[in-house]
Length: 211
Image 1 (spheres, helix red, strand yellow):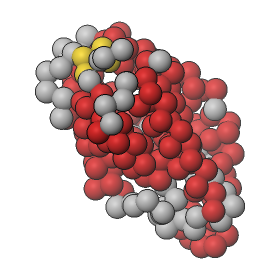
Image 2: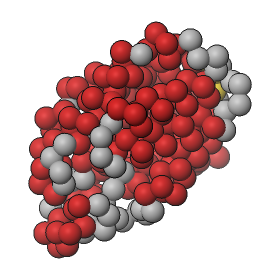
Image 3: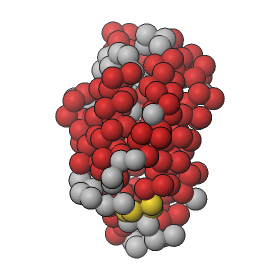
């Protein structure tokens, strides 16, 4: 496969809803250990709303508008800090795509990279802070390397998900530096970050949809 079509990204959104629903209890359990115990519930609510609006979202004239509308839906329906962060990710991911209705691997890299930049600007987190950035930034680096090596889209997505999984697991041994978890200091060590986990699930859903 050379490009990702808009219809495939719509399927991705549907699949995110399913995977978040399936993992809601796991996300909530992770968040209950060092957070507010609401991440799974909030993420499910947000993507359920995306799913409810999928027919409307499908009428978006291009991928940029699809991502923008998805982000706006998430911001308005996910509670807590997650809504602005995940909403910003999708909105900024679409902002660099112009009027494209299908995208290349390079486009995908640019899109996710801009989405991550938006999340970092809003959340002020970096790799090592025990957040979703520990998954998303390495994923962007992996995509950049795949573009440089001229890998196939399928291989690039597989590499991205492997790196994202490692990033998710790496949060277990970190001290949280952002959010409520940061109040625990060293007691946050030994717990996997819920936001990193949901970010991994979102990227994994992309790979499984496309591949």
